[in-house]
Length: 489
Image (cartoon, rainbow, N blue to C red; front, side, top):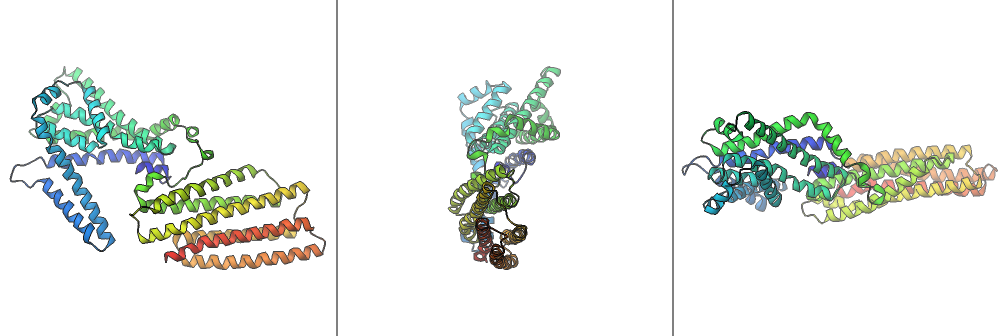
């Protein structure tokens, strides 16, 4: 999810790094809960029974409640319960495995910390869950299948193996997603390297009489499950404390390792800023981010409208390249966002409001894309004026300036209405759109009067009327975007 957020531009790369640090600490709670469930005897209420009850109650809420809120909480409770029931079942299955003499002999022969770290990393990468690997290591230690020290190195390796999910997600996404995955890998590898070096130095200084296993056995005697669970927490907390002050350095190194130019692969280097396919895993959030992407697209369209007006009124084409680049980006967003919304619309975990909203987005996207096209028409009129050495009169320029301001007022109200689903802003936008209709008619009348007075020529006047007509159509598309909220009320 963090990769989806950073790739969509919701959070910065630096923020994503700190979230990863916190998540590493948070995952240690699973081991603590599993270790807690290993205490006590036959008369002790098993945590497996407790979490089974959670799963049952949650499933009942999700299946039989009429309220979506209760259904959501039921799903969360059921998932939480099933997670720990599954971990318990996997851990208990290791008891029979531990009874095999061949297994005992094989594991007892492995004492090299690096090999144990690699085994932990590979196994975790296969099952894609460090929590499961740590739980299995806990059971192995408690049943005597492996020593505490072996369990410690397996757990350290599981931290590296847990990065495989982030790496897979990052490979299919943009540069920031790849950077986030690399930060995750470097952070976890750094922790393992630091602890291996410190452990090696500790063994040299004490002639092998002191290691991590001995330290935690002394701190938590007669509780091997707690010893390993506490090391897991200690390992992640200490790693975060060491790396956190160096966060910006790590982010900078990763940005150099994966520079911007490497990610400008297709579509002229354009990408959707707020959504990507990773966000399809959380449909409600993807809907909110889709709206942000549409608003960004609208901003690009009005930006190009401003450029087109500046070009045709000054006949200065210094912004032409930027205009064309932005027009390409608008066209890219149009295609990519429609594809994304089609995928998102097929998701079942959406409210009725979200489904209705998504059905309106196709027209809104098309309306905004058309605004860009009309701005492009205005630039073409400017090119004709430049070629013929013609220009608008001062009165005509004044009217164009007023029309541009009215379009901006309409844009502000239309986007405010669209963003907040504000019917009041929509009503204001509608009033401004009607004023623009009246104003463009007045522009036509004034143009005819200027032609009769010999101030304007017919050839220049034709482009003036086309500009007026195209701008009026831009207003129509803006009001369409604002009015799309009516179906949501």
